Image 1 (cartoon, rainbow, N blue to C red):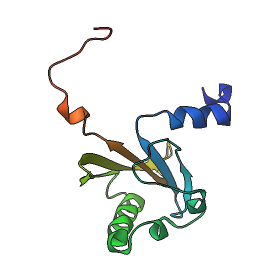
Image 2: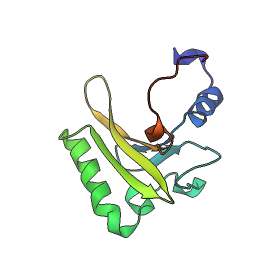
Image 3: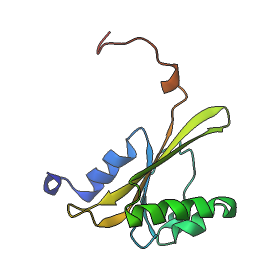
Image 4: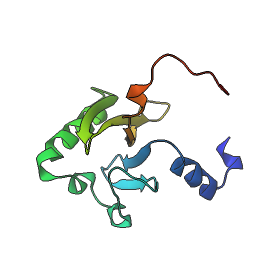
Length: 128
């Protein structure tokens, strides 16, 4: 259980995931982002505490708002997109975070460069 892990260790674990993650609370405020060395979308500490709508280009704010509205209303729990960026295929997923009673707590964003994953064929067994 998490009570055996320090906040520093949890953050270090999150920073080692092969995805970038960000968390926006139920009030649309950015509360967390992982700190990888090779982030696809850069983040600065200044985004913490800001409304997520103010952290996106104006042309995409309506899409962000639609996702948040759908999550809050329970219309959807996942939204996913993929884009080509600098010759790489980037997979962006948003997940509604809900408690055990299904109350909306916020949104988790996971972004991953899947360029090399898409090239995988056949199988490779552990320790081959």
